[in-house]
Image 1 (cartoon, protein in one colour):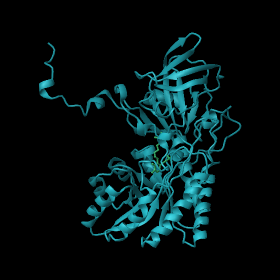
Image 2 (image 1 turned 90 degrees about the vertical axis):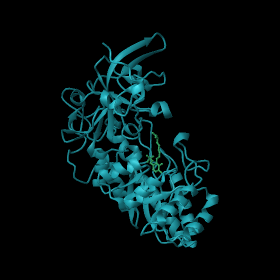
Image 3 (image 1 turned 120 degrees about the vertical axis):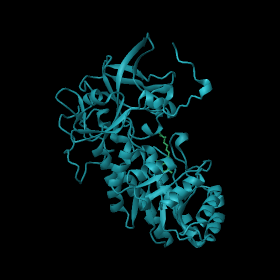
Image 4 (image 1 turned 180 degrees about the horizontal axis):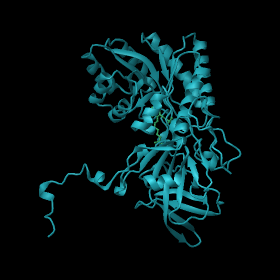
Length: 470
Ligand code: LLP
């Protein structure tokens, strides 16, 4: 049972709270997955950041993404503090903004002194506009355009070069500039990990990064190019990973390659171990805490460098999901239902695969609470369907929920990562609004799209326009 007291002092100063990943045993399993400021108010409703979720839906409409600022700042601080504790050299945490790129999220993250991983001109533009410091912006991607490379170099960002085609393009673009291009090399480390095959990237058969067989030649090539300043190596092994061992193995692989790159004359001073730490979507998910993950990675880098007698590089990590995932819930309104006798009961909500494509794409499993009747016992097993014209548009399969009725507010938990950023307008649904909540104040960070927004980019050539109806 969730306490009626806030789980934390609603005070945004440091130090923050217990690690976000550690279960709070006094709470029911689903309630443990809520953001840190969650409480039940005296109307038996869910509050986040001091705001009543049901009232937020009345004010801002449904569906609604609700981001708890304190939870997001807490995870930023946990990463920063863990690196300061466990890594004796310098370090920089950079936010993988693909998890959720918009001005407000990026501004919060930038204000916490994190850098950014961007993968497109659009993410770079958003990050810069939000106040991201170009010196800590790293540009990724396996098919950057010449324009994107120029844009990033103009602003003083670091390019993480992914392949030979890009490398040659960068040589060309950088040759016309006053300063050498600051760059890193992304390599495929050949590390397998247990996660969905679509979000695995470290194995050899991956579209990302230089294959190990190419690397020696690439080091030699770069060492001969005065317009390139290759300061580091990068690898990322995948996402939603619960084991520590793959990242420890990665440390060894990166340090091995660092030694070889230095031997080729490259001024390698930074290693980037990527992101990938998983979060709890359900009560059975058991990832390491941020502190444990950072400790394991830092110790492995330190040990590998000591063994080889190499100086410690600046250490970078680029988490996305574990920074923003647990800070958000999505509130939907319950509508129609259908009983298929002897098989299942469907209840439908007013969103689905367009605001959260993860269940249909990766068979991701989420948990929910009934935000307007928090203490109602879960006595039914229902399948929560989205409203899209697609049978696979299922938000939750076989969920244990209290009996619901139309108008109830269902909150799906841990929707901060890869929900809004992968949202679409499928079936011409408008993308939902998003608010950030803090100390009883809800601030709009994304406007709900209107019908007019949906046709804004449409063009109707004159010869296709129908005559006006009489
Ligand atoms: N660095 C690189 C180079 C990446 O490709 C990614 C994620 C990250 C960092 C951040 O990984 P994280 O800490 O978030 O696990 N859409 C999928 C996830 C795709 C991840 C893509 N790359 C999902 O919804 O599960």
